[in-house]
Length: 397
Image 1 (cartoon, helix red, strand yellow):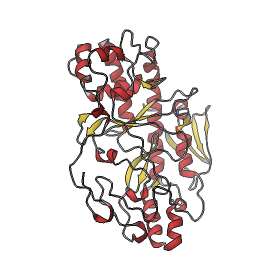
Image 2 (tube, rainbow, N blue to C red):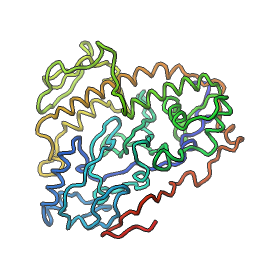
Image 3 (cartoon, rainbow, N blue to C red):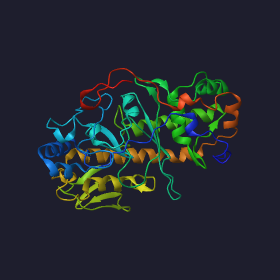
Image 4 (tube, helix red, strand yellow):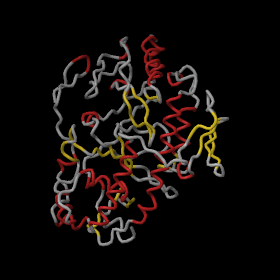
């Protein structure tokens, strides 16, 4: 979009003003690609006593076995000191452990250094979490990704930026957008009221790195807006992976051609054969665009494998993991290949979008949309239920 410089474009931080740093665990063992391992890790922790329990827990300055913390919003976990915990494992929940990598988490505030409770309060089936990704000069990956589940700060690899929930309240209530933005866009574009999801969809395909953060050029041409929103909604559907499963056209769908080994060690890509080689196992066809898909300078498929096949220090809770490769991981892998290939197909159409005469940040300021009030940058007051504090006390909000 050469007609719009980063200085002209409104900032994502102004268009979606409420943002939060991603939750940070401080220890790796409360997340895993499978829920069974998490329950086994919890059991090992609560069966250990004294110094052994402390060592397994991996204490930090933020969390120890004697930390007193409240429940996570919406969770019914214990609030007593972990040093005395003997109960069953809290039911694991799905989270986004890294870009395009959904895993499981034990949702217990006592295990998480920085849980960001304000994000948990608005997490539901209708929420969309928009995540700023690391910008690298040699990567053509997306600058923004979206997820239906809560994204975590990856323990390894590139850091991710801030998390922008699409809605400030549960039930898709109160869009997290600059007040007056949707009405102004609808009037300026002549399309009538604009939906909050349309604004998000446009941002997914139009976001550009700028000197002060992520810029989102806005078009004044309704046809350009319509094409961009259509592309963005497709990207959003693929990133969220909810509803119908995405499929590549017949003949291009990846299949397991040779069974994956019970304990994979090495993964590589054969470009000539369009084949993902996992030791002696083979999956094809795998489009090169899927293998080359990067986020934050990291190849997504390669890192996805590394997080499931990397070694763990013996005697740690991370070492409790499946002894053989689960079939569910193969199914998830085939779907991930499909998603990355279909997202890559959108790139040429994204690059063809030209904003032309843009709606600039200066225009939004003249219209009174910007600057946003300070209240829009703070979380909404969500008081749907009482939240249990440390040692069973209820939090006064």
